[in-house]
Every structure is written in structure tokens, then in C-alpha cells.
Amino acid sequence: MTTSVPLSRVGDEARAALFTDARTTYAFADTPVDDATLTDIWELARWAPTAANLQPLRVLYIRTPEGKARLLPHLDEGNRPKSASAPAVAVLAVDHRFHEHIPHILPIKPELKEHFAADATQRDGITSFNGPLQAGYFILAVRACGLAAGPMAGFDAAGIDKEFFQDGDWHSVLVVNIGHPAGPPEFDRMPRLAHEDAVAWA
Amino acid sequence: MTTSVPLSRVGDEARAALFTDARTTYAFADTPVDDATLTDIWELARWAPTAANLQPLRVLYIRTPEGKARLLPHLDEGNRPKSASAPAVAVLAVDHRFHEHIPHILPIKPELKEHFAADATQRDGITSFNGPLQAGYFILAVRACGLAAGPMAGFDAAGIDKEFFQDGDWHSVLVVNIGHPAGPPEFDRMPRLAHEDAVAWA
Image 1 (cartoon, chains in turn red, yellow):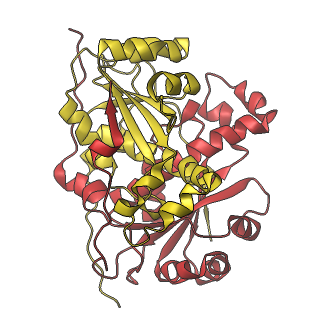
Image 2 (cartoon, chains in turn cyan, yellow):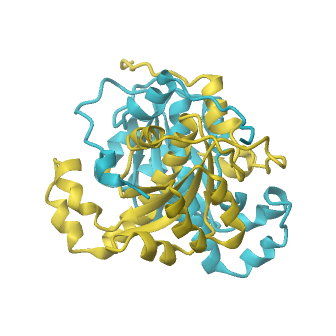
Image 3 (cartoon, each protein chain N blue to C red):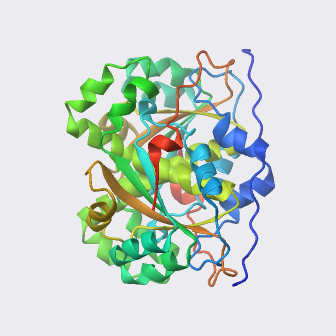
């Protein structure tokens, strides 16, 4: 037998807050969320793993009335009241110039900076997989900070990019409303696939 | 003021196990992981949100010597000893026929089954974003179950698909070694981006 390093199973309360009891939120209370808490979400999410530690995800937090006014026209109409009610909205984006950080984040292979700089197709491969991967971490980090998340795919990405990311490097991939629920969920949670339908064994 | 529903912040021990102290694992102890624990990982991960609740991620758990022998040739050579040492390996895949489940998982819009059946490009849009999103949930669910995860992108996806997914519906996107670490990490954790480098405000 080799020696194993003991890890701790996460307790039932945390499992419920993160996975089994958490609900996507569509209407938020006007309880504010301060910038320190929003920063704390990033401080958690950033530690989860990415390919070659490349971390292409970026976050734009919108919480001022001016920022909201710029955002809302680019959301699908049915999504506007959701983001309007949220004290903070995170626009999750991928940075197509993530390779600029390689000397810092991948010090064992700094030469990969030039490799990725010369190959936009390979950069797209990194952002298209690791962006949503990190979005998953981010949503669970919102919940770990005691807040509700309302992720939405219905928005005009090119419109948001033009409005907020004018240097052309960041590309929006998901909008996540963040705050405290205004009330209990309005409908039952929809079914998830049982392991019989989603898990195979070999 | 509207009334808000209180949520619980996840405690420091759970935050450490999931995010701030967890490490990608490359060498595993021979401590076994039973099928009930592997099923439990899915029972957690499946509750986190996906676009329209479509849940395209699937999991193939490989833990028999026969299964390992079929898997290893399709991994990059440097990754083979990692998976060989892991008591369980999860091949994460996306199901290009996820729409078959729509009457069950999206009962408010059963007609979307035919919509997606007729549009492979739209199906690709769902799987390419929500597959990695759910992979992020899965990796954190492994950790929530008290196990270490070793995700790897270095493998021959077409080779794995041909070996294990012969009906052509499932497409492998990530391989995750699962188990108990054989020892402490062999090198320091690589840097993550500070919020100054990854977070913007509006």
C-alpha cells in the first residue's frame, strides 16, 4: 500500500448550498452586494484548475445604474427584468490575449507565450473549453459566498463586447445575475438526469 | 425593501477543500474508490445549472483492469502513468443526442426535442458550452466527495470515442483521474491571476 493523504469530504450543509438545494434565481431582493464580496467570489473561483494553468476567464462586474443602463439593451427582452433586479451582474468573458500572462502563470514554460501568440486557432481551443469550465467554477463560487446566481445565455454577445470591451480582446460568454433571492422559487426545480441515464461503467 | 431569502455562506473548511487548498493530483494511492462514491459525485454535479436544463454531460467511469487497458493507449504518453495509478478514471463526454431527454428534463417545452433533433449546429452550440460548464461542476463535486481530481486534456478523443462510444453519440471532452493522493504535491501551486488582472468594474 502507498500512503494516502487524507482529504475532507464537504459536509451536508455546504453540499446543499452548492449543489443539491441551490436554485437559479430570476428575481432579486434589493439587498446590496458589496465589492469586497464580489472580489471574494473571484478569489475562490480562480484556484480551480485549467489546462496548463492558462485561466482565460475574465469578469466584468456591473453594479452601477450607469453600467446597468449600458447592459440591459443587449440582453434578450425576457432577461432584462432579471438583471435589472440583481444588485450585481457578472459578465463572464474569455480573454483572447490570455497568453500575455504566461510568463507569470506558467513560469515552467514561458516560451508558450510566443507559441500561442502565433496561433489564434490554438488560442480559440483554449478559450472555448476553459472559459465555460471556469464559468462552472464561478457559479459555484457565487454560491459558496452565500449569494444566489442566475446564469443567462440569452444576450447579444457582440453588442456587449462592443459596449464594454472595446479593445477587442475580451469576448462575453455568459451573464450571471448575483444577489439575494427576492422570495422562494416560483416553480419546482426541473428534473436532472439520474445516473442510469448519464453514467456508464467500464 | 423586498424580503430576501437567507442563503448560507460555505465555511472555510469546505472552501479550502473545494477551491483554495485543493490540488490537481498526478499520482494516486492504491486506496480503492467504490462505485457508490463515484455515483455520489454525479448525484451532486447533476444539480448545478445548464442552459434550458439540457444537461449534455455524460460520464464513463473506468476502474477495472480491462477498462484501464483499453483506455491507456489513447492517452498522451506522459499521462498514462497518472491514469494507471488512479483507482478510477472518469471520461467526461457530451451526448449529441441530449435532446432525446427533453420531454423529461424540460417538460415545459417538450417541443424543443424536435427543434434540436433537426438542427445539429444548435446542438453543437449547447454541447460545446454546457459540456465544459458541467465538467467544472464535476471536478468540484469530486472534491466535495473527499477525493482528489486530476483533469487532463492530453488524449486522443477520436480514439477514446471509437473504443468506448461505438454508437457515435457520446464525444469525450476531458479525462479526470480520481482517487486519494499518493503523497503531498511535488511542486508549489502555480500562480493564479489576481483580481486586478482579471476583474473589471462598471
